[in-house]
Image (cartoon, rainbow, N blue to C red; front, side, top):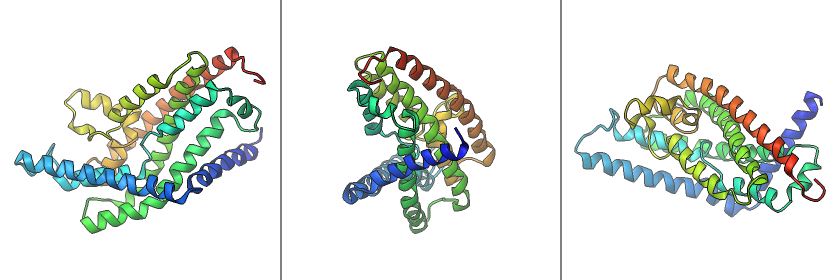
Length: 269
């Protein structure tokens, strides 16, 4: 297969993901704008109240505005899980809908990853001006010159995490119900990414171990670098863990998928 053909197939899947995301304008507005903004306001109220109630101006060495700047990144949703998307992949394997996908030019992996990436990209594209405006209006720490490399890490993380999601979804070939396993995996990742709280608040040595994992590239590293909580050296180390994690999760996904297809006995497979 030529590189041009490979690129065209994946771009088509990305465009399909974007098109499916903007098909319903009200749902699109609610999902990428209203809900994330409400989440950010809840986080802002929580951390502001927590720091004020502590009687100190600093928490973990940072004032409240650094926490607001940190959680501002979560509005882009690049490090957040897409529960509905993962459940759809599992359902397609369970009910045999995967048969039709196996006959398409693009693989099951490319088809779904392209759509997920397209949805994440259109969300980030629309919301970057919004978070920039919030940071300017509230005078939050927001290093806009760091945004391109931060977005690049976010996209790399989406691809890495999808490999893990794909591996768990492919386990539906072996088990009748893997939804609970998928949910448990997502809850653990929710903590390890730093979406629950900044990872630098964890006690040592747990803090160093968790930050060294590739999951910290989902929220903590990009959000902390964008808000000035960490320097460039700490941030750039995240790409090393992304590369290692990408290889590990990619091989795991390929192995489970290959073994699953051998067991699959669906009509037309």
